[in-house]
Length: 195
Image (cartoon, rainbow, N blue to C red; front, side, top):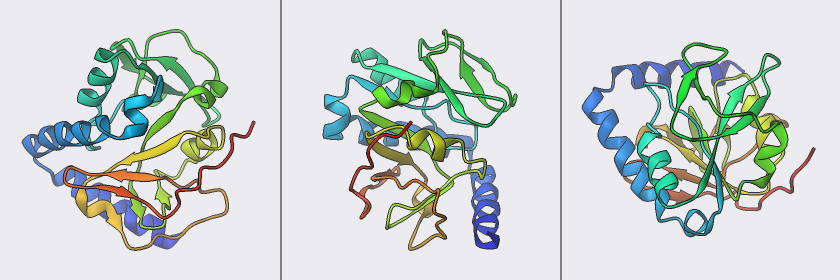
């Protein structure tokens, strides 16, 4: 657990230090890379998220997916730490935690993620074996247990690491996308949906 805390602190500091123009450019480059993934091209439904200011931005990706006719789902953090989902119509508001925005559309329930062909999820870091390090609340690990779709993490280049500690409940990602790379990770076997 100490290693996870250290990586989270290091990444958080580096993200806060990134200039705004670098963040804006990274968001556009990441969107371009995600949009050409064959699984995303073929997807009817994509679960994504509203990025925080320090995370790799998702606004260009979400807008492009909606423009091409994809149904985009966004998470809503629940008091118990689980995630509900709603359709992304472009409108967001402060959520349970004011620093995390959520969609304003009607909620669909926590099982709605099971219908996503692709899940684009946040990550603090990802290892080459697909291990994903989140913020530590377990919300996405619970949500990812409900989907059999391709799981894509959005990162900055320096957040793809050789290895990370992995707990039994940690759900892997299949693809890591950065501004300069698209990496198919070793954990490519998709888990079957649960719950």
